[in-house]
Image (cartoon, rainbow, N blue to C red; front, side):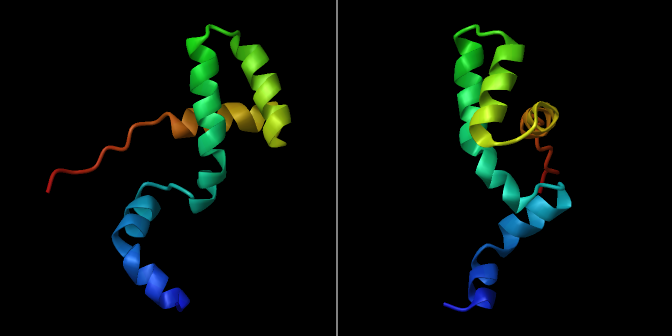
Length: 80
């Protein structure tokens, strides 16, 4: 498969992601976000969650908060 063929398959999704400033690199942090949600559900302290997950995923605490905020945002797509 050529790169252009793969791009054609995902063209609509990629265009939506670009329009809403969603980076394809954020896919690395899906599991981190899921871990965050489950830890919040267990009522763990946010500072503990930030320290634990930033260490686990090799990012700074500041980046952790930034990513959680960004991944938690709603996507407001216009009605067709």
